Image (cartoon, rainbow, N blue to C red; front, side, top):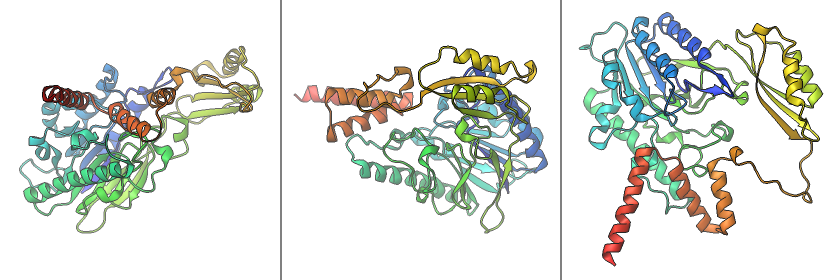
Length: 431
């Protein structure tokens, strides 16, 4: 069986004021050609289809237009799972319609009584009929909030939190593997996952964790049941193996930050045959534009912007990070003048201008108050804890509770509030 693994499309994302839909449309056109040319049997998209839980009409149109055309490539099975950026209910809403064209969507973990049924997806070979036996079974695991797995971490210490996560995620993968073997027999199992997994994932790969922010780091690859032949992972934007050859991140097909420019963008072609280990072939994605970071003094950055060259079809998006002794009010005008050195139809796009102090402030200099718009919610909460004098285990417990609330999906948050309300009512009645 030949599977193409991709993830983290982030349809609808913008860099500064610039929409990336044009590049995303070009990627999906290329992907359709690859599916046909390489005679792919199944396509797996491992989460973060959209960049927002409320994607624009243009982003949704791009998604549905692609899925409508997948059948024409000869692909027999398509599996799409939700990521932490996606609305689980939004992805699931057209599920019945998409199943008519052999596209199975699992936006979020289904309710308990239908969990296993919904998350087992038969994968079929090109040209096979609906009544032909499948060639493999996909354990379609979307992004899973810990609350959905019954993990309550507020009263746990750090190691207890990590142990609870390992046990809960491992138990779910094993439950799915058991159910797949019981229903379909000894077929290859292909799993998905949208999470942080593996010892070789770097901390900079996930600047903000999606499970218990700031506490558990990456989960071990041992949570994957041993019967899983290949795990198609999403969430990390860099393509890398975490349990070679059976578990890989495909990475995002388009670079969305300057830090992502150093790694090649690719999708993964996975072949499973007999009892042998899967073979994984990276397929480089043609890049439509570069993201460029210009770092230096004002004169240096202006000169480099005026002389900037590129080979991609679309002009680069430029982040100017300028080192200054004091803020320069004329800097933006100088940068805009530098852009005029390029032809109008081939002009770089300035998406960000930062002015940075040449030397860090000394201990004797007054501390500046950070700008609220530049802070993450967790940083604001930490400042509040400091201002209120919360230290030690009290502070740690508050941060764990805040992380659970911050990363909760709306439905899970409603359940959490309901639990607190019930406990409060019971306490009042008891007293």
